[in-house]
Length: 228
Image (cartoon, rainbow, N blue to C red):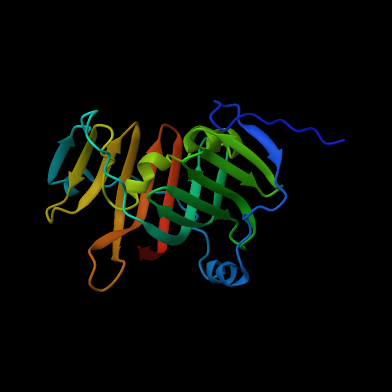
């Protein structure tokens, strides 16, 4: 007999769970093969030297009655390393961000599915490699409960593009060329060590992003940028 535990999607954690019969957690053959060309990043970063900072900018959150500024749409492929006191993980990821939704797929270095994370107007869903689906109201709490480490999606959709979220106060460090090299926001420290253009005629975008939160360290390397 199979036991099911189902709660409304707007309920708070602990997340509700149900067996997923037809998940979208496994990508097609072409995408899996593409990811295999990029081995997972395995080393975690140190903080940038303080003498690289030329200017620090303090920003205030938008007023409550001001319309939110959405992050730009993008589709990226890359590598991820995660480490804290109790565990470590290295693998690959694909992230498609649109104004109304997000879809993140996590893989092992060999391309095996680890998890699918989706967020839309109805809430957040995480499907594991065991085809179990968990529902919650925010990605950060859900990933911390199910994967063991938190993914700050609300801020990361901006940080991955080299800017801060307009919803909360932030500090940004710029170098002598006015290029952002660090952001501090919502308890997270985000450091940038490499940039690349998505297209020959487009501005530089982050390629290597290092995130710190207490004892948690996350390193993201973007191997392919696609701006929608």
